[in-house]
Length: 452
Image (spheres, rainbow, N blue to C red):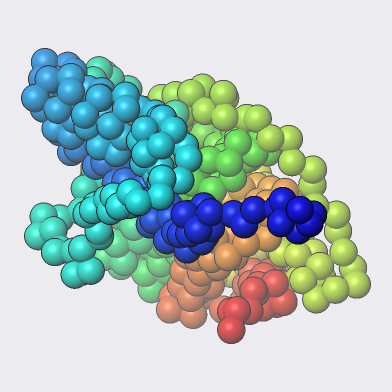
């Protein structure tokens, strides 16, 4: 027997089985890919179900006595457990595939020869666009807090800045009233009672210039009160809200100077009952705001350095000079009001000496001194608030707008009233005009261009 005759050919059935297994393998691989895709889809369904749970929890926070979802409730029907045995996406108690499960039914082995592969049918995503929900969108921010147990005053006072803002708004209201009342040309009731004569009666003397002089002080005072209110609103809403310590001190220094100026009446002997009542009403609000906002002082921001080489830097220096000049002018006017009361230009404008004024009415000079000292104290308060804001504040659009508004409210009435009443002495009006020009130049150089 030859060696080749001892070698037998492989049976045809074995070759056929091998060929069939090779041909079946790509098909089994495709089945595995499809079932893997189905697994991804079921996983996505699970994620969406969780999202639905969160949404339902936000819309219906506690519908079952404090438990978001109970047995039989949405979105899970298994007592709050997302999926159990027999549920989707897995039929094996949370295990994706076990022996005998898909993708292979033969203990993780491909199908035997002759078996028909099992095609697993699963639901596919709906290709149609989702139907929009007609209900308005709901977020957790719009859901009322069912456990809100804040006190009434605690809710409205908050961190104390609301008291500062209320003080600022009341000062602005007082300033607007002062402008309106001075524009009528009449005295306040307590002024008439103190003088024993009306503005119309006093207007018959010296061409009404005594009344006009008093009106010009009160118009200027009203404009400065508006400026103080604007700066206090900005300080409370922006830097103090960010916890910048300097803003608290700016409020304390400016407010302290303004309220203490009320005591200047000791120098001229006239106590304005309306002025006193307003001061006593505002002082507790302001002090309460300062006490409550002490905890906000967390950021000791360094003072921005002075820059003499850039446009913005020079503009900032001009603003510092102008606002310092406002405070210095306030000191001068309050000192004059507490001592001599008038400067030579005032006597020249009215055409009457202090002695003659005393002869007309002994209460005239104390009343005018009260107006002058009050105006000076307001200037000090406004100048300090603006100066500290420019010195320590971060350059921003809000700061620029606050300074512009305060400057407009302070300078315009104080300067414009002079030509209206005919008091146009340049030695008297010149410093105010110069300060206004410096302020405008500083504002123009520090304006922030709009981004394109």
